[in-house]
Every structure is written in structure tokens, then in C-alpha cells.
Length: 231
Image 1 (spheres, helix red, strand yellow):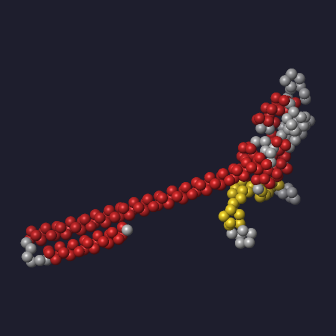
Image 2: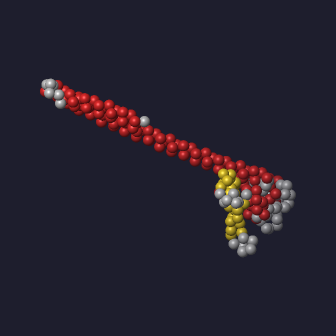
Image 3: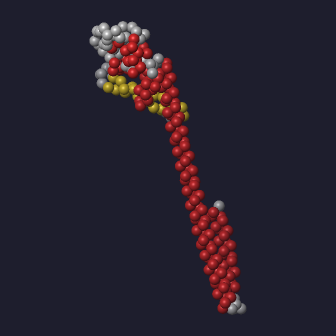
């Protein structure tokens, strides 16, 4: 549009310049008239340069506005993508926590979030992306054959199942691994310290510790409220 406007303006200027030039060459003009025509021609050329500069300025402004619009659109797209990824991962981990009977949902999510990512599902035949995504967990595990550390790929649900199997490490994350009906005399899921069936307080959450300390302090190796040792 700017280029078209410029071409029209230049055509008009060229026509006026030609007219003034022909008049300036006329022998019937006085010296004063010739000087006036020359000044008009110069003013016309100055005006042309001014309009070209204005067009260049407007063109630059449009380019800057367009560039900013593209940048804002790209940023908004990335923000929405990040929200989608985080929301999908958070929901998948929360669902897995509920299904696995996790003692504390946020604790379970916090434990697995750094290991979890969203990946695109590929077509088995073509190997190309399908546009659909799934949540996977890069779970730190141990090779059953060599005993060496390894990383296995899991869904949030299968990761929770594996964590339950590794009760000595993750037992305190699940209700089945805390205490069998707070108030019993046994600890499960890796909470026992290995000495007389007592519970290792390092593997308890603050809430778990307070409940056991209130109702069964002997499981922690503490004295009862009456002051009598139950060791």
C-alpha cells in the first residue's frame, strides 16, 4: 500500500516538475518569474523528500508492530502449552495418588513431579506423532539381574505400584505402609526401624508422628503419658 501510494505521488511530482521546467525555459518569462519557478520546483522536491521520509517512518512502525504482534502470539502460545503440560501432569499424578491410596496427595505428587513429563504418542506403523500425548515417569529403579541403578519408564499408576513394592523407600507415602490402624503394635511398609518392631520417626510425616506419639508412643520408643516406660 505504501509503495503504491509512493508511485502515485512520484508520478504526480514528475508531471508538475515537467510543467514547471517547460515554463522555466520559456523566453517570455522575466528573471523574477524564472527565479520563482525555480524556487517552486525546489520546494516541490523538498516536499517529495519529506513525504518519502514519512512513508519510511510509517513503514518502520508497521514492521515493528507486526514483529511485536508475532512475538506476543508466540509467547501466549508457549504459555498455554506450559499450562496444558503442567495441568495434565498434575492431574495424572493426582489421579494415581488417589487410586494407589496415597497417604498425602500433594506429598505423592511432589515426589514424582521432577521425574514426570508429557510425551507425544507415536504411530506404531509410521513412527510419526499422532498429536495425542501421554504422561510418563522416568522412575529411578534397580536392575533385578545386575543390581545396578537404572531408570524404567512408567505410567503414574505403574510408578505408584512400583513404589509400593519398594516399601523400605516409599512405604510412608501410602496408607497401607504407615501403621496398621493407628493404634496397633506393628508397623509396615518400611517404617519399622528393625529394633523391637518400633517405628523409624524419620519415615513419618509430621501428622503421622503426632498421631502415633499421642496414641501409641511406645511404637516410637517413648514413655507413656503416665510416665511409665514401655520399652
